[in-house]
Image 1 (spheres, rainbow, N blue to C red):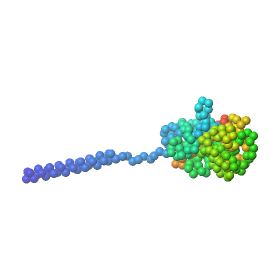
Image 2 (image 1 turned 60 degrees about the horizontal axis):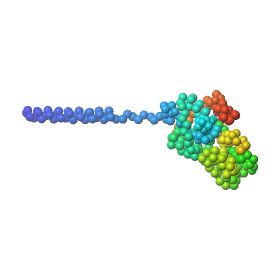
Image 3 (image 1 turned 180 degrees about the horizontal axis):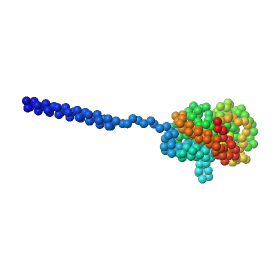
Image 4 (image 1 turned 90 degrees about the vertical axis):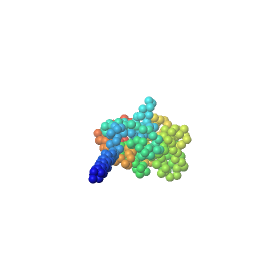
Length: 278
């Protein structure tokens, strides 16, 4: 009897230990479970948290954004971007990039927005969203001063037309029937250099860019003929960032209504080229 009772007691204790071990394992397993994943913050929330918005730009695009004699970034877009960031309670960081790859760079999140006098086009709208427009612009023809024969788009037939790769000037030039060649350059300064030395007879670019270069070289270049297109400028934003677009639109409308955007325009163009608030 004693042996049997002893064995019975041992079995009871063993079973109790197993039960405790299993319970402890379940408790440990419950303790080690990862907490439920938190909702991922949208881009604007991340920007506010970091306190910085990164803007991609072509830093040769005078007078919208370019380097002065001290290599400092200046221009209409620079002033506007700094004011937008200030009103959002953050800072802005500028990221120069090759213009012909700017949309791809935005989509790969090298920066948060494109702020570089970007023309709103149907082709670009297939890939990205745009803020409300802030400047009215359009493509025109620039020739060496005194050159004749360029009045309409039809006059570009059988001609070599220069413009910047990836620009709305490229889109406009390639839609013109009968051109001999659309010669693409990495930057507009390169195109204007070739125009000056006679390698190309005409440059197609936006009126803002043309006005700036002509103001610096009134004896060298001139705008001729009809305006080829009418195009607004806006800030490029990823389609996946509607919250960021809404915040930027709100600030731009405020700047239009209180006259800040007009002041910036007068500083750089001596006239108001902005698009009024809706």
